[in-house]
Each structure stands twice: as C-alpha cells, then as structure tokens.
Length: 131
Length: 409
Image (cartoon, rainbow over all chains, first blue to last red):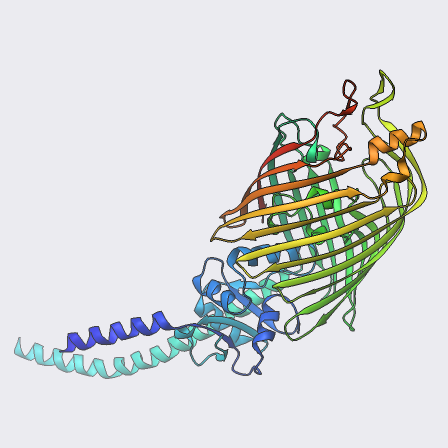
C-alpha cells in the first residue's frame, strides 16, 4: 500500500514537473512589469535599470522562455545578439548556470528579473508573469 | 554484559538527546550558511561581472570557397577556386568608460585585401540623458539594411548580401559622426539616425566628401521597415580595367581612367522591409544611386525568401540592377564610347541557397547564383570584354558557387 502510494505520488510529481512551464521571476520587492517590458529587457531595449539574467545556452528552459516571450529561436537569438554586439548597440545579458543560481542572483537584486521552471519557484523570489 | 548493555543504552539515550538538538541546530545553521554562501556567490559573480563588463572582446570569422563557370568576375569569382574574396576575420573590443560612454574598436582582416589589418569601426559613443546617442570616429555608412554588420555573415540569412544592391556603393565606412534616437512604443521601436563625414573609395582613391544622410527604421522584432537618404560629393577618377576597342582591331586593356569626377554630387535613396516570424524570412530592399554627369545612375533591388526547418534555412533570392542614364553616354565621342562600355550595366541574378546552423555559433552556407539578362551591356563586370569578332560582349551569363562558414565568438 505504502509502495503504491509512493509510486502514485512520484508519478504525480513527474506529471506536474513535466507540465510546469517557464515563469518570469523577480525579487520579492520588485514591482510588477508587463510582458512587453520583459520582452524589451531581454532584447536590451527599454528601461535600462532592469537587470536581466539568462540561463546558459542549451538549457531547454531558455529556449522555452524565448519562444514564449521574445519569439526568437536559439539561432535567431544568437544572430540578434551578434548584430547588436558588432554594431556597438548592446551586449547579451549575463548568464547563470541553473535555477538555483538564477534564484540567488534575483534574490539579491531588487532590479533583477530572470526566468525558471515553475517547479523551481520558492519563497526567495516572486513570480511576475507566466508567459 | 548486561550491565554494560544497560549502561550503553543509557549512554546512547543520554547522548542522543543533545545530539538531536545539535543536529536540529546544525541543520538550521547549515541552511543559513548555505544561504549566505549563495548570497556571497551571487555578490561575487556580480562584482566579477562588473569588472569584466568594462572590457568585452568579441569576434567573427568567415571562410569561403567561391568558384564560377567563367571569368566574368561576379564577386571576384573566376573559374579557379577562390578562398580569399569572402574570407575575413573581425576582432572587436568594447570598452565601457562609464555607464553611458563607451569606445568600440573593430579590426578587420579580409582575404580580399591580403589580410591587411584595418579598423572598420573605431568610435567613441555617448548616450545623453535625453536618450540621444552620439558617436564619433570611424563608422559604417548606414545606407543598407545590412550595412552595420555587413561582414558579420552569421547575422545574415544568405551567403552574401545581394551584389546587385550592395555593389552599387563602393565604400562602406566613413570618418565623422552620427547621432541616433530611439522611440520606444509598447511593442515596437522607431530608430532615427543622422550621419555626416567623409570617406574614400578604396579601389580608386576617389574622395567622398560632405557625406551626410539620415535613416529611419521601425521594428517590432518581426517586421522591420526602413528608409534612408544620403548624399556626398565625389572627387577623383573612376577607373576601369575593361578591354575597350578604340578602333577596329585597336584594343586597350590597361587600367583606364574612364571618367574624372570633379566634386560631382551623388545621392542615395533606399527603402527596405523584412519579416521574420522565426519560421518564414522575407527581406527586400530597393535602392537608387544617382551621380551627376556620366557616372552611372543605378536602380537595384532584391527579394529574399527563406524558411527555417530546425537548423536548416533554405532560401531563394531574386535581384536586379540597371543603369538608368545610358542615354547620357551615347557614343558621340571616343570618351563617351568608353564610358558606355564601362558604365552601362544591367542584369538579373537568381540565388538558391541553404543556411545550416551546424553547431553553436557556426553557420555553414551553400549558395548557387545565376546571373543573366545583361542586355547590350557587360552586366557590370569588368571581366566581360568585347569579342572583336562579333562586336558583342563575350559572356551573357555566369554561374557562381559558394560554400561558406560564418562563426561568431
């Protein structure tokens, strides 16, 4: 019975985490911002006081985020930033290694925003938008 | 034994109580330490980031193989393999002097110019409180949609920007200043830019002075619309290496001064649009170049369509160019005849290509371009000479193969 319950709980967790979607997170003290402002911030435009962090290239959550927010594929995003860099218009955001690193940089900077899988959200950060 | 066991169990239970308490305390402390460690790490990475943020190094590399079915010279291709023309290396350093001031230096080495090191961008920029960005130094002439990153092949869908349009202006950078201003709308950005300065045409040494212009572009990251106007004064000689029949059987082949430009006014006007929804790509540009006097006035344009299928992007391009002032070069004199042969030009070009995003930061491109419809002209190719037996130009079409890799780092 216990075993069965464990399997049930485990499989439920698996299902939830498979369904969990990318969410935009900010410092608990941060003000809400719109999805357009998030898009602009991740393309180096708009309000420059917003500090954004990206997950590293190859992370599927990164691809999912950009699909939903900036509409750019990995290759398009790469081409976009090489355009910006080599015309002196901007540099790509700093990257962090994973969800826990993302949460800790967001937790220490009230102006920072980033994104993680919904399943990794905890009390150190606040969900701003579910794109 | 019994006693010992009892003592042991008592001892154990006695030891257990404080150790449990310690364990609980330890756990809390561990969590606290872990949290602090995380914070220190975050602060440290922020500090490191702010130090490394002051100077950034980036670069791009392109290696290309080009070959053609004849020696007409489309993009300098001939019937033997050419590994130099489109091969290049660019290194860029960006220095953040303050939050709003930076210096950018981009050094380029091109196979086309024997890998000689040249600064393509070298400027100081400053963003004022009101959002106006001022740049001064050596900059790209922002006439075309791809002007700003003309050599960064990775940022372009095709193997090379269509020669019919991009070949119409023989210089790509200027020394001077420019200002730009962004207007941010809810979901799009309007950018206005003005520029002014001077330049020289590398191949002929022609001076380009009083260069000034403006462009405006709007983008919502899917659609981009753009318009540009520029003008300059041109001073110097326009040379050509074309074979010219001066009289029956008398042919000159030397570097020939076809025309002396004497502060002739040149104007450039262009419109462009692109669409990229992540799957479908469409890009088009229409340009008009006019220069006073006999120097050619050229209309040109292209349309590129592409479709992304995962890491593959097949594309097609149709491009054209045609000189619009052929009647100014009617062969009433020997000079006009020479100018007619050298300057009258028209052609169509059709490209079929494939961009393959092979690995991170590297795209491999395959392109076949066919150019024809030269009319009664050389097609704009200095390698296309008049065949004395027929009195017509030797070639009336050309086929160019390109294999290229473009990387950024």
